[in-house]
Image (tube, rainbow, N blue to C red; front, side, top):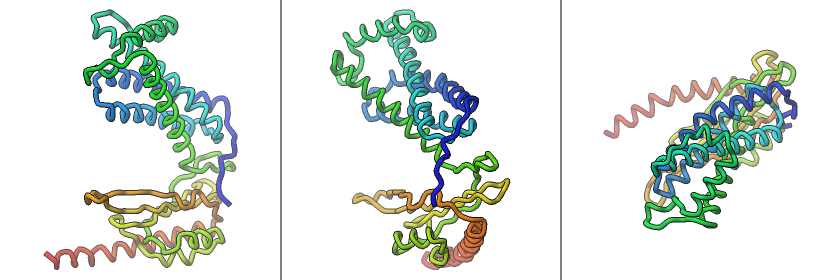
Length: 300
């Protein structure tokens, strides 16, 4: 009923994924290792670390896409391994620039090629500590090891999560050996009963989704997406996401997304029905826009 990756992959495709991830790692590791030294605020450091892992994961994920890897376990291991290498390179960069700030000549490329020497320098830095100097106290010893271990876990964990997210973004047509492309996307009004809507769509009943009408992106709405193989036009999937628009107690807008249905397999006839619904929703939204503008102008 729902699409799942077949588990297939090739050695050549895996090499493409690894090469793509490692190429991005060289750039991102240098930027992260060099820039993290200048970040004194803990929250910003956390954000930078998470962003570093996410970018590594996204780059590796697209490498998996280009290599036509359809195996989640292989994708997870690949993203984890690439992010570990990226983390190692960032350590070499960070150590080199830390030593340079202490007027000690060091080259990160040389340190990266000598893991033993790099480890010895890291242990030496740990004894004296560098993290936490901005607050007037130095974190070193086991506390600093804990900080570094958490950093490693965050980078690798976010990279794996991001890589799998990219890999599962589009379904793969095994008959044509190509990734499906976006066939249609529409914004619908939020239904009163999401569970009932899901059951009806799983039973190939599209009457309820057609009756929803166009949604408003400024309010809670439903996003329906159709992915299709452009070659055979026989492979189609449908996904639904609920976007909830709200406000905090302070009045700040909030946006929350929840996947209601991910890649439900459709036949060609039902896919065409969904395209027609999409066209009707687009036309209805165009007709509603002038009325909304006129109403807003009348209130001024």
